[in-house]
Length: 96
Image (tube, rainbow, N blue to C red; front, side):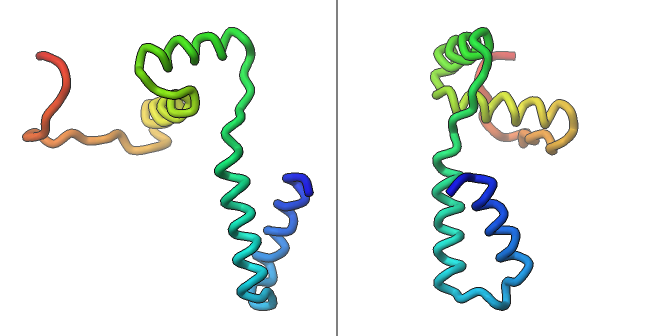
């Protein structure tokens, strides 16, 4: 079964949620979770892959963690997500 087919099944199930058995719903949700867990393969151009590898090495993160970090930073800077607030008494890294 391909991803679009499974997405269609999930959408259909959402439309008729009262008619679906609990067991079938559990199976669909587990399949969806498995697909999400295994969907980490985002392919990039060679120059972007190289930059990601370099950054991941500098930050001591995995490639996927680096992608998550970059996307979060971009979303915060472009006001799609709220910026993390630091409390005044909290510890910070670095020197002022």
